[in-house]
Length: 409
Image 1 (cartoon, rainbow, N blue to C red):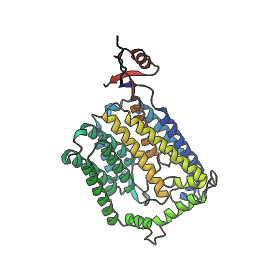
Image 2: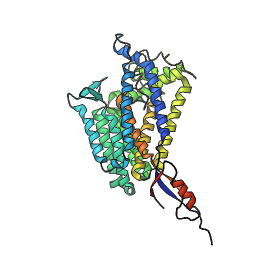
Image 3: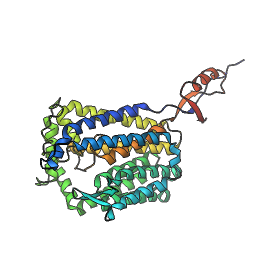
Image 4: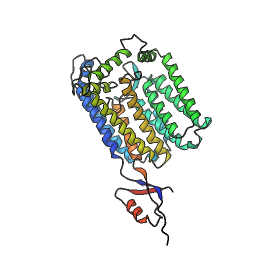
């Protein structure tokens, strides 16, 4: 009797989550805690005009980390498919949170920008949750309209609506160009991997470039940042000062750095040393070696997240994981590039490392969603119906920690 030829097909399993994501995130958060410990008290000393040397930044970051881990654990237990039918409401809810900055009594002005909301004594930045809400909604839209994305009505129009809402809420209302760039670039990247036509991508990117140029001209402080980046400005008090101090910090670190806690730029020279500029402190204290390590960790994280997206069992999980990967990847890239003088300053934090409770909680919560998606991936195994491969297939399916949940021929 002729033996049947073994055939492979993708079998989907529910299995252990991707714990490498946990390790990478904890490395980044741990590095952030160490840096905040070594420089946070300097910022407090400066803000209090020498009246206090306490490290309240470290205490708040530690509290936010605990809250974020709790949110991570909860979200890792919730099936990500539950977000699909309520994606629209998540987006609307996060957008309404953004509008709270317009309501007196809730709005809180920090450093000249009204991006904070204070409710019952708890302050937070709504934009961090708006990033996640936008990505969830975009993933849901793409999964439902995947075959129509190359058309104008079903592809470009919804895309421009999403980007328009993001632009109004972030750029116009909150004057937060950095967050807008992260969200819009993430949406475009998700749109691309979903199979949008080349024509639509060219139109969309051209429109975005034109809008960015227009906004830079309309708002003087943004234009000043662009001119500073291009070397066409003599300004030494704001944007130019910031980037010069960041470059001094990075350059003075050399190959191995000055050493932990030995930063000089943190003593009032470099603005936002524990927040937006923390990568410059990394360069100063740990040199090229430490900076390269941080970049490598982010690169590995991005690769693992993309791998989770590629092996997700459905389009919604795939696009959602891609969106999370692009969000964190773009934000890290923009922050690091700004500190190295490769792009104009944007004022966004370095994910997981920069001081910021809202950002840390939102990111850790998002890691729970990504880790839940990582539980449902597929492996190419031998078809159970193949007589020659039946034994191998059974052995694989009953292996520890894996339960078959679906299969596709």
